[in-house]
Length: 214
Ligand SMILES: [Zn+2]
Image (tube, helix red, strand yellow):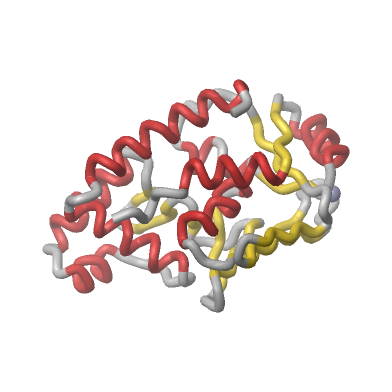
């Protein structure tokens, strides 16, 4: 993978290691419950988790706080705000998994990781921040169709100080071509890297491929 992504990859490795270490524990079932709910576009609160998994609400809250500390979810003021790769509010990246309700991804890379995580057909509908042209990526079986077909992903290469969801995700977008990504980079004024769709899908798979493993 590109050396500019070293910082991001390090963050991802840390999260994957943590998730592997909790796989057999109750906290992992809380994490999975959140992901399955958000994948269907269903918002989820602490009491839903406590009721559905039959876990004491106090313990549920502790699990959510721990997942937040590890930057696996964002849990603030008693509410689940996001859980990689899903947002709980509309973003530029709408995702439809099989024939379920629409949901939203935190960033372009997260959207592209969802097919490997859910192992289902996925339609991603986004747009180029520079010209607002619609961009779609359809995963159907082994086939991936991108429109327009020279769309790319651009992301800043700045060092991640806080949480990826706050610091980096809002800036990782699809662009309808390299030129628009370049113009965007000039406009926002920070260094970034353009990734082909193939590279971005590989990164998405690397991050989210094992997220729902039991
Ligand atoms: Zn464009």
